Length: 81
Image (cartoon, rainbow, N blue to C red; front, side, top):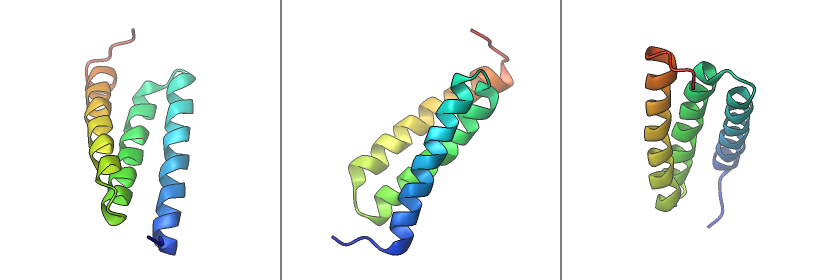
């Protein structure tokens, strides 16, 4: 299946967003990294849906749940380790 220009752009944007989220978290700012990673998961889930790659969509939803737990722990509960 040929991807549209929008789908290709969405995939690139999701990938860059995910990498930035990992870097932000790795340098010690999980309060910012987890929300950015959640954005990446939403972008990946959208990409999976649009390209009918439901495995990507489901795994992105699962990663999103993990990121929500991270947001709750790091942002709202203030856990540091």
